Image (cartoon, rainbow, N blue to C red; front, side, top):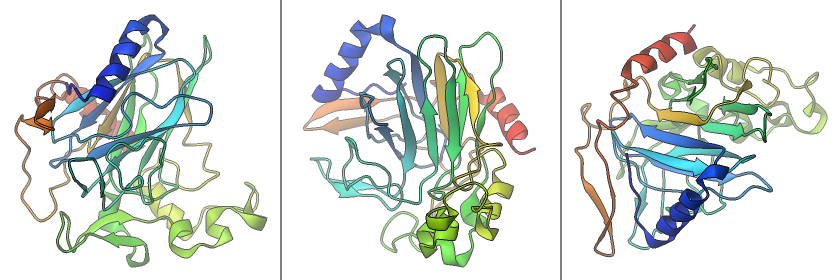
Length: 300
């Protein structure tokens, strides 16, 4: 499990720990991809930012982030990132204002999103995985810590492999993923037309219908949002005390321009201090079988 030790984040996590009785739940973010990703988080209006808003997560690492009752927001993975020692840089997909810590900035499309609103008191949580802003990584969201099962949701397919040319985002030649498809835009992002964006005269469910492009996303990922009014098959409810958000659950994606390999356990340092360490055996092994079941469920 990843332990983040920067001063700002440590203080936030300590405060959250002291208020543990007011926790609504914990988000456990898992990188099952064979390469490094940089998850980002963004709180919705009226709810506080999580103690971790952006960070590096090497292959096999996981991090547990506590949240308060009624929290609402989204999470995503960034790819192909480079940052300097002050946390300034850029990502090929999912960039949030050129910063390591997103601090209130959302993802630049295309990005696969996990969205959730936690219910207050006995109210249920509402959650989904959305490809409305396009796709960059496969992910699943799995409710845990509940007496009876709730539905997992997500997208386990590698949509980049079947992305139409007009929607493709190609990686920088000099960076990771150079020359390969690293993201798949939504038709709204690619063409900026009301019929694809569900705006203007198409801003209601009766006039905004699935398009040729949204159908591609829906066929690949039946439980994920494919366009703005795709609520019927894409929004789920539960009352859980933990959600696992797993990137590359099938682990069938390879590192761009390299063989399928995983990063060893290693230290991350900032200003000479260790800010994180994790082992690939922390959370992936206990849920390996359940991931296989989830993948089978989401594909049918």
